[in-house]
Image (tube, rainbow, N blue to C red; front, side, top):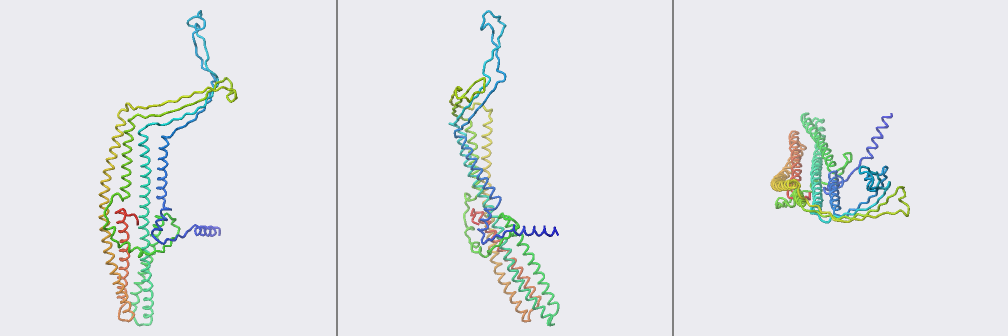
Length: 447
């Protein structure tokens, strides 16, 4: 009894926790992902961290103010010895008198202000911090593009699977109706059992295929929820159709667009990284030059044998110092030169990566353009085949109803029609995917 109550409570809690999300377009799904996807959130945190690092670097060149207070109690006042003949000329030369110099207790409080006046490496570091913040922004943009790309493919998969389900559902309903009529005709003794059995076999196969399609939809929706950042227990309602995207798909704009490396987000990030590495090399070079800083220190000091430092008439003795500090690198055992050479090699590596990326961009464009053209041609062919298969199937059904066609012909037409439907839906899906790949290859991220 208790177990049944617990299970009921868990079930009710699961229903309360479940949320239904309505999606009416691909853009809405992408917007949801930009708000909920963990990768996007972390990329935005990295962007904010980079901004704070820029400010952290900036503060190095601002005035630095430090306060200090100390209290000392000398349990044993330091003792020094002096020759006794310093006080008494008649005293032996080897006689020394112990003397204590100092006060048992002392207190001091002071403030120090320092200001960096010139340091070439600081100014370069400040530039590098800004470039690093820009690199983090580029990387955040790349993450958003990757997430939108993944959501687009998952969204098209769901629409494609639902389109297939819709087509199959209509076919299944017609087949059920046809089988019901054949079964009634058989029961009246007008046809042989083999006619009914063939039709029943076709219906059973279609029922099984329909179940498989429904499961494919569940998997596709789970993937979409994962890419968006929803809970897998949430349910989504998509009020959209794959046909809505056909006009955009059939456009030739992306297929004829000229490649612009600067529009590629990966290339932009790599260029940003190159600028950052060049500044790093410049920073090491500037560390070979002198740096100059100014400072100002003021303190108040008091001395006493008793703890009376907070009495109003207690005298405090000021100490005030200001000055400049010049740091001139003279010899670092060529370690700085080694750092400069390492940075130079890193710059060369990034430049090589740029050339390699340019080749990759060219290849991706060529490959995706050919894939898109092939998918477009395949879709046009399958669209014609679907109309033809539908016409053949409808004619076969009419002939069977009029008694001039066999159930074998109906089964064969049904099988061909289903295969054509599946091929058509797959061709449409491939058209969507190849167009998305082509847009990404040319730097058009409006998926």
